[in-house]
Length: 374
Image (cartoon, rainbow, N blue to C red; front, side, top):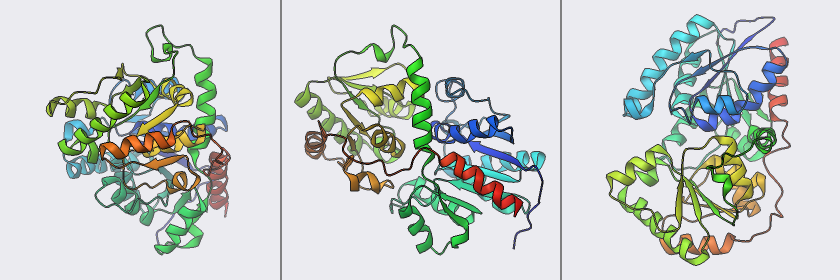
């Protein structure tokens, strides 16, 4: 059994490195700050750029990280090297700061690195937010990351009963699993309120008045392979011709690089946007007629906002969106992408949000503090 250090006032650490992690941990960070809890923020720099890093903290009214490791994946390249470098840097920080509980969220290389390091330090407990998600596709690097993190965590905060069932089925003890709802609901509610108070810049994407579709496309298994990337672009061309609506596309740096390397062109009707922050993106999500994506987090956000979604994947770790009808898996075949867009366009948001009531952060804090006292 791991030896656990007890403290009357525990120190918490949040490890993050990507936009979705910042967004989904933002409700917890705000709550801990408001209640005066002792915490440190550690940013791995996994997706380092001004738009995807400092801008998010500023926009979301979050404190800047206490530690920035500056280990971007695009520089280090290979995943093994990247994860290993993060592990070494995180171990140094954990040894210096001595956190009682380390929070990670999701399924990135930052999550994997922090999970392995925390699990090997006898005085540190590991809390995995959004535990129990499975796509059952081991070709996705994220699938391996979340499985390993779940199996070394001390606290597993499952967003749904379905996620709890998955964790139980993998042999994880009941006393480690807590169904809290998903912090993305807290984040969407809090951050949309902030977004609506902001005014878009004259050149900004929110100057668009006519109906539009919103596109995100960045996953390694989609844009790193010419045939699949090309097929998705062909599908988008069919969608643009069918509906005659502009498709707004805040393009991820990975996607832009691959587009140039493969000498591919975006279809007519797809309009790229200058880099935008999360608040502007959230407003676009709330106002679009249809979301086209390969992102897991965007599937959730669209569902919560009542916007129909078409996903360029054949599996999803958010099966609840399929069950309630807010989302459909289009795969990568051009004509199927068009058929799915036709099916989802105009669908009324009669579904009930399956991800919770927006109080996941409160439940998570209550659980860890109750356990610390016990």
